[in-house]
Image 1 (cartoon, rainbow, N blue to C red):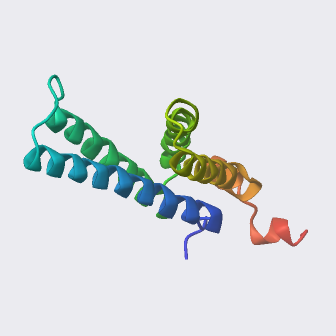
Image 2: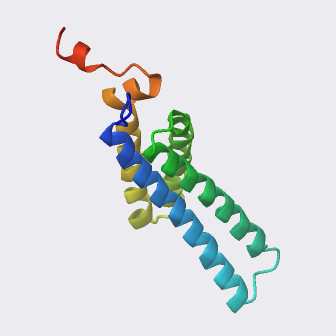
Length: 138
C-alpha cells in the first residue's frame, strides 16, 4: 500500500469524470454516424466537430483515469471541466429549455465539485494527509 492512499471521494470523481469523457466520445461517434448517413447542413463541418469532441473526450477520460489512480495534477483539469459543463448545462436549461439534460448535468457537476473540495480530497491534493500517528493523537 502506498504512503498516501487515494481518498475514496477522489476515486469516485475519477469514475464520474471518466464517464463524462466517454459521453463526449460517444457524442463524437454519433456525429460521425450522422455525417455518414445524412447530408450535412450548409456551412456545417460535422467532421471537425466530431474530431473536437473526440479529442476533448479523450482528454477528459485521461483526467478521470489519472484521478482514479491518484495523480494530483488531474484535480485542476477536473475542476475546469466541471465549470465548463456547468456553463453548458446553464445554456441547456435557460437557452434551450432542455431541463431533462441540463438539470442532471448541473447536479453531477456540483457533486463532483463537492467531492473534490471536501477535507479528505483537499488534504490529499495538497499532500497534507494525516498519518496514522497524527490521527490517533500521538
